Length: 279
Image (cartoon, rainbow, N blue to C red; front, top):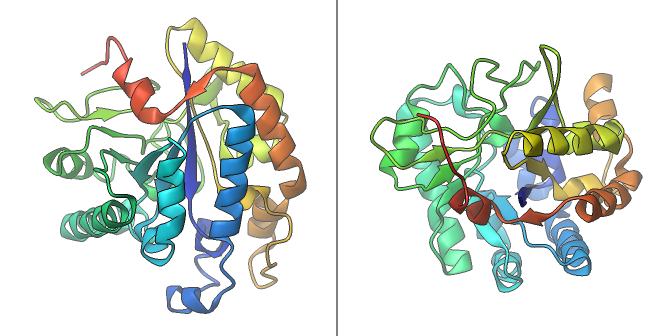
């Protein structure tokens, strides 16, 4: 069984940890590091011989079209991460529709191919957004990976299924939640900052758990997480700074180890192989 390897492509300053201290109006004045960091991820994947899905902001695609072409040329899947990292539960339905349409156009213009996958910023499709999946289905997306089936201070939908399901009756759209590790009744996130901060064995444990249940794992991280030289934002709350900056220098090595231990593939290939998807 192959598991889904995914990258959420965004700038270091576009993360939820800094949303209250860095105004979106100032984004273009900040040092851009997304191209440098994503190229480093592409090199790491080439060295490891794996393909992945790059869930990319439309904002990034509009400013770095050559990077988008390099992702596609390397054989990876290009998918949407929305336009500018606005969480879905903060939008009205019509705003969400406009957001995904704008992002898809930028990605398709830059990449030269159809976009069929979507991931909400910060896994922000949850019980507050019953209209989000129908909008994605109406827009013709084949799959979404926008749900975190756990409770977290920034996001989460603990009542959601752990594994792939059809969120819209009569639609082929598949939602593939990000993988969590379970310990009794407790669920713990495993990708991104959790992978960076916690022992890598936790994520491997989660991969083995879902494999034993006949399911593929879904792992994610961000290009900025392998960049220990990125600027520091002293104005951010200490908790946000600890989450964002801790163990950046260790991330690339941990990724190489995880990739060696398990078989990985693009999200679209993993979705195509899914069986027994729940209603």
